[in-house]
Each structure stands twice: as structure tokens, then as C-alpha cells.
Image (cartoon, rainbow, N blue to C red):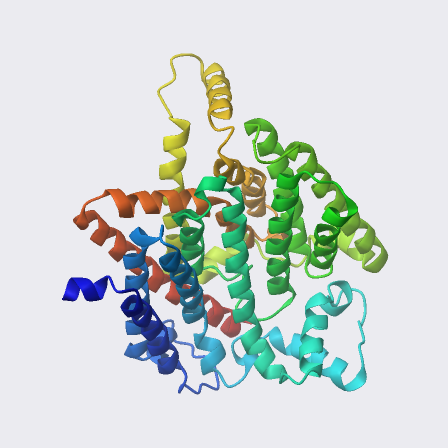
Length: 468
């Protein structure tokens, strides 16, 4: 009887929805006016029901993983992963009486939109976000003019963007799968891994130019991959991508930079691995990177020329060692848990693919021969090509520790996007091919990562409010 119940699709759906509702209803009654200063503030305010709901949701998702070949379970898993990211990130927006109480920058953005609504659009002066990157303000203005309360929009909009980002990430990875493998577990598992990220520097908690920039980054990445696959250089085919890139440029500077670097990386990986899906992909991605940079430079030079003065732009940022020393050992430790988990899963599959062996010749000759071998063997592996396309983002991440303005912590979030597909393959193999004991250990590990991610995510926001 119980085995039939556990395998009942309706029952599993009810369990997942119940887990989210338990968490949501536990947070809803909270009314907090001011951010607490206790390092474990998040544990003080959240009732036990919230944690029970999270455990139930994660447990049900883990149960569904072996069944992802079925359409119903795959759709359920995608929807449930979206619910999980909402559950992990909804606490402060639901519990606090005002948005600026948990995100000080929001007051400036909200005041700008409110002024536009009452007095008309005013882009302000050079250097102001609404002047340099007006798109997020335009969108907020449009919704508020349509009757959505300003406070409600700034609370709800991030959740909508999270959901869209996850759907776009799913579609991006699905585009890379062979035609006979599109409806597989890998795209779904990728958004599951994305859902419990503890990082919130690039995919921020609040509605802002930064968060709108992440949305447009995913849109441009998806359209860019589809465009490269089609290899159709007609005006009709180019228009959606060209407009999306321009909207990205109007949204945020760092997301524009990340897209340029990613397109250059895709051009390099498409050339090296001779990708079978990207028709003339090397040239296509290279031209897209050049187009994006040229358009960005032209727009920036006309609208905010001081931005392209490196002496001005590279000032006023704290360096990484300073950030680490001020965070404390608990925050530094919890910061590393999620990235280490994803990188470990990624490396397990990556090392299997490249077949690292003990060199029997000079290191230089061994490396060159190995690269040639991998290039020939993986020429049809578009997932691998995609992941290797983030190699320049990895280099940017390393540089970000030396050049504070590049914000290495944000780059890390972008870098992990390239790791999710191979990490998902590792996760799926662990779940499918190992013993019950190994599966239990894997479940407990993922649950621990999820719970520490919640602490890390909200303690990061708390520190931002307290330290100013």
C-alpha cells in the first residue's frame, strides 16, 4: 500500500506543494521592523515550520530525480525547483515591513520610480543608474503606472525574475542536448543546483539594475546560442538578439561585460572542439562579442563617457582580502560550501571526460597531445563545449581578486552557470548508479548544503544592512 502511495504522482505533487506552503505560511505572519545584529538572527526569527517545509521540499525533489525521464516528473521537478528558490529567498521580502529595511539601496531606486510616477520621467545626471542604465526603472515605472503598488512591485519582481532565469537556464542547456536527448534529466538538474545557490551578489535579493541585468544576460545567452545553432544571418533572425543585447546594455554594465567575455569564450571553445551544432560558431560568437562591445562602447561614450575612464571607474572599491577579513570565519566558511559542492561535482565529470593520465613525455608535449585528443573526441559534445566556453569567465574571476572593480564574487556566480551541466551529469550518475547508502549520504549532503546556503544568503544581506 505504502509503495503504491509513494509512486503516486498526485501524492508526490501534494508533498512538494505542501512543503512550500508550510515554509510560506510559517514566514507570512512575521512582522519585522529592523534588521537584527545577532549573527544567528535568521535562526532566531524563522519558526520551525519553515525548516520543516524546506526539508520536505528537498526530500521530495531528491525522490523525483530517478524519475526525470518521465515528462510529468520532469515538469514537476522544474516547477518544484522554482518553488525551492522562492522558498529560500522569500524570508526578508515577506517578513520585513519595508524593502529598504533589508536592502538599503532599494530606497534610491524606489524614490526614483516614485518621482517618475508623480512628476514625469527624469533620467537625472551622468553617473546615476537611472541615467546610465534606465531599463529596470522603465519597467518598474510601467508596472506602477498600471496600478501595481510600488512596494509590492519591489518585493514581488525578484521572484518573477528568479523563475524566468531558471526557465531560461533550462532552455539554454536543453538547446545544447542532442535531438534524441533533449527531454533528459540534465537541464532539470542544472536548475535544481542553481536553485539553492548561497550567492546573491549578481542574482540579488532586491529588484535593481543588477538583477534586471542578470535577466537580460540569460535572455541574450539563450538567443545567442539559438542563433549560432541556426547559422541564419538574415535580418529577421538577427533582430531579436540584437535588440536583447541593446536592452542588456541599457540594464547593467557588469552583466554586459560578462556576456561579452562569455561570447568570446564560446567562440574559442567552438573553434577548439569543432562543435557540430554551432554552424560557423567560432565566427558567429566572435562577431556577437564584437557587436556587443562596440554597441556598448558607442552608447557609453555618448551617454556616460566618464564610465570608460579607467582611473575613475577603478576607484572606490574595497579589495577581496579586506572583504574576507571583515566577514568573520563563519561567513567565510559558509560562503565556500556551495561553490565547493558545485565545483566538486563538475570536476568529477570533467576529469572522467579528459582522462587525466600520468605523462610519459615532457609536460608540454603531453598537454598538447592531450588537448588535441580531447578536441577530437569531444567534438560532438556541446555540453562540454558550453562549459569550456566559460574559461575566459574563469580567467576574469581570477583577475577579479586583483582588480576589485570586477567584483570576483559576482563573477563566481556567472562561472558556476558554466559548471551546472557537467555537475548535473555527476549528480544524476550518483543518484542512478549507486547503492541506497550512497544515495542517503548524497541526500544528507545536499540537505546540508541547502540549509547552510540559507544561513549564508541571509547573513550576507544582514551584514550589508548593518555595515552599510
